[in-house]
Length: 326
Image (cartoon, rainbow, N blue to C red; front, top):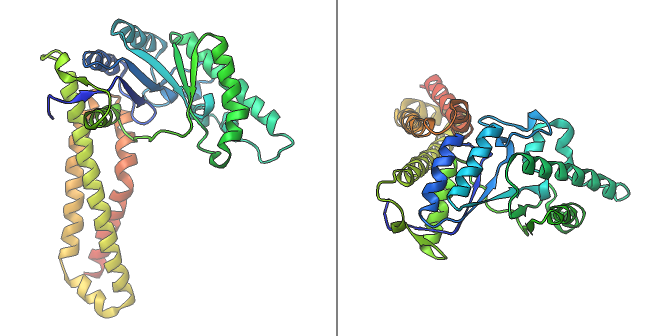
């Protein structure tokens, strides 16, 4: 990881995938500020301590005191925390509560569409009020568009996003409404930070890493986590390749008795499956060690399960099938 990396003025992070401890986030913010980052766009989602309904909170959610602490650290670091409210204010965390989940979708019935949308706007206003009651009122808010209504984004903007924006602007806060959803990186915030830094280094406005304290260990930690997750990505890609190759060989063996003997008599496929599983387990354990100091254990376990469980199960099944025809 080169010390000559450039940092952009603004970085976006999504706390809904694998949220860090509040203490970890409070260490990262000053480290980014020392490298010239002045704005942090935050998708709080299920990490925020919503009072609308406790079921909106997910694993690793922050307490009100922790959120206040993060805002105070950001203020001292001269970093603006800009909330991003997905779906025009109807955040994805609402999906955790069954009676709220439908609000981000516009009904197909034109006769009741505006009434339906008005209910969504009222909920989005509650989200905004809740956000301001716990955190400090920001100078700017970003409103996303509904991923669940992609073919009528203009209509969704008219019926939901713009009325919500008017309400927020009336509180003296500027609003930016996105034209399209940004890429979502399923992973800890270190992945998004590393990606933003790499992008800024290639081209764009950036501040040099040399402005930071030479003794600051936080940024190297960020890139160490990102590197470990990049390694996991490569191993998972290879594992899925193994699944495809061995599955095709087994399918052929099931159709052709001669091939059944050939596949069953070869140790290569079985060794490949076993070796892939062992390598995946080794890399996953290294990632777990990297993550567990900065986030709750259930969050780490859930993230790694989401990434690895499907391919692990398929590899284990292939191993059993290979033994059965061996």
